Amino acid sequence: MIGDLFARMRHGDRNALSRLLSHIARGEFVDDIRSLLIPSPQAPSARVIAFTGSGGVGKSTLIGRLIPLVRAANRKIAVLACDPQSPLSGGALLGDRFRMGSTSDDGVFIRSLAALSGSSGLAKHLDLMIDALEAFGFDVIFLETVGAGQGDVAVGHHADALVLLLQPESGDDVQWEKAGVLECADVIVIHKADLPTADQTMAQVRAAIDLSPSHHIPILRVSTKLNQGHAELWQALESLPARRLRPSIARRLFQHLIESQECHLRELEAEANAELNKLLADWQAGTLSTVDAARRLSALFSRSLLASADVALRDGLAPGSRSPKASG
Amino acid sequence: MSQPQRVVLAKVGLDGHDRGIKVVARALRDAGMHVIYAGLWQTPEAVVRTVADEDADWLGLSLLSGAHMTLVPRVLELMKEAHLQHVGVIVGGIIPEADVPKLLEMGVAKTFGPGTSLDEILAFLQKPRERTP
Ligand SMILES: Nc1nc2c(ncn2[C@@H]2O[C@H](COP(=O)(O)OP(=O)(O)OP(=O)(O)O)[C@@H](O)[C@H]2O)c(=O)[nH]1
Ligand SMILES: [Mg+2]
Image: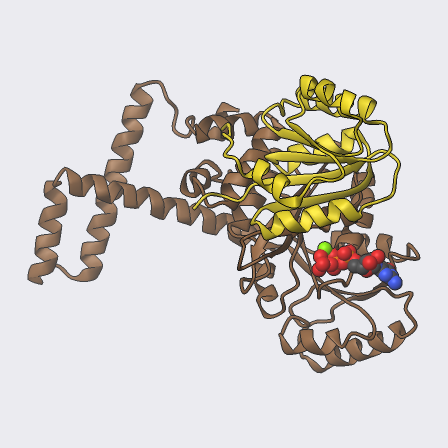
């Protein structure tokens, strides 16, 4: 069932993508979906940008203004917007979308997500949702956090860039500095720059940044009310290097390797493989060192991998042809 | 544990009163649902897109403007085009008695007039519904 849904998504069925995201959000079929989403090295790489900042700082409104700029650059955009979920009732009032403005443009996808309080200000399994949106063909993915504070550093792991929004007269800059988010941000936006004390806030933030020995983080003034600064912000975001993809592709491939070998181990155990048993007995008896035992296990794995590839070839299945990519 | 229902609430048409819909939104949240508030002055196209992208179980439309006999059928038609027939549609607002059976005939699951209690709406939405894969 999940395989069908996945294939439909791969063929451009938007409702299938939407349903897939629901499954991921509820933690259903997560392992299956993860293995279906194994990245190919040529996968088109979306640019993922996270927006964080205190409640009411204007994250949703700002994202709503950036969407047309992204579309004007001929890029398809998806937004994952997190709002808090009540720990008591489990209910949630998801209002970000309303602030982003409504559209029926096919190149724009907005999904509202409930994030449990006390978590990182993000919904669960966000990485998988990002992969699914990327597989569907979105070029740019925006994440809006709940703006919980400390945990927001975590969003940086999912994103190519982290944008921190601060507003004048809120004392936000001090709070976020304490939480260690200030120096993790790739871009800092002084939002609501139409408010009278924006200059002062800007100076304070600059001073705080200059104290830290890290890099020079761009600080931009944006007013959504006056419609100022959005083009500059988008330009700054576009010119940032893609930090997420290179290490993460390697890590995901590695993850796949581990998972497939775990499967193998289970099979070898189940069939009481003679070579495996011998190896384990020798290791236990101390006649085989741990390093040598691990080497022999690894050799055993690659031999059985090769054997199954031979079977696949004989059956007319080229290696990898069973991956969802190639069937699409 | 059952998964929270996802409900999109939207106002179509020209009137600018959103107090009622906000009260309903809050009540549904407190009952454990996930409420996506889509806002005022929505076009039928934008509403249906929201329902699709949010993978909603329910769409709650609110209308006071008297345009329900044009706007509701339009939304239902677009939902069918978008293969969203599995989503239940409820309509709230001022709807003349005579129009109610017509709306139900078109595929609206239920209408709620101005005097409806929140409990009534909740009870209706909490009846179990099948989700298609
Ligand atoms: N003065 C001023 N107000 C703004 C500006 N941008 C947004 N606002 C107002 O700020 C309020 C909050 O905006 P949102 O976009 O909902 O803020 P948010 O950060 O997404 O809020 P949460 O999702 O609840 O954390 C709204 O009332 C906006 O109208 C701006 O540039 N200047
Ligand atoms: Mg918001």
